Image 1 (cartoon, rainbow, N blue to C red):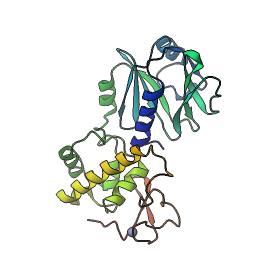
Image 2: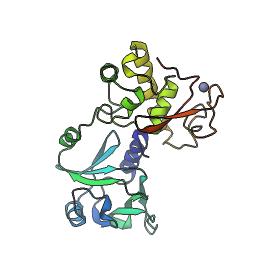
Image 3: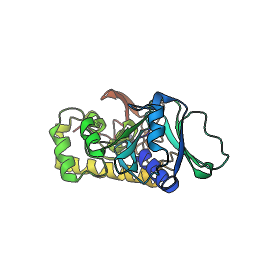
Length: 262
Ligand SMILES: [Zn+2]
């Protein structure tokens, strides 16, 4: 499921492939992913425009196509983007394809169709209406401490709550807690100043490193939990069997020896 690092990687991909070209058409192969916009309206409003720049907030990607027009992309469970040149055939699960001149295309691919495409006019208004918290890579240490320290509940559930901090999903939350040597069920109110600083640093490190490696799981460090999580997985730090538990409604993987409750 695309989280902040994957969506940031998609943002950079759009920036390097799809900006400043005239949109000649939009093929909607499956309107299920369109939210609050019809296929006809999407085509009408984007045709002859250009994608000018992009912005990411949490797991949402916004691509600007005019002074008051943004294309919002959310990647759900299996969404991704592929830029196709000339005669390259679009992937089977391509739901919407943005066509540029010379038959270059940007395909929004989504096997399971939990993704979303929408047109919005005001980015700030959208973020407010959704009640999204600050982006996990934009938030300052002091703001982070204020948010985490103020909320009751398991630290993992707080990291996952997009209304508090936007961008972190299940996999990276586990990784951040593993790096911070913190049990996912730790009550956030029990964290002291040093714990919160350590958690903040772990969050930044994990997200930035994953982006730098273009979220290629094969290149992620072997010292990370991500490449070991799952049944029969062993802690890359101490070698003990990893444990799982449902926390914040999601399956968490952790090492009960290395990650202590506070
Ligand atoms: Zn361990």
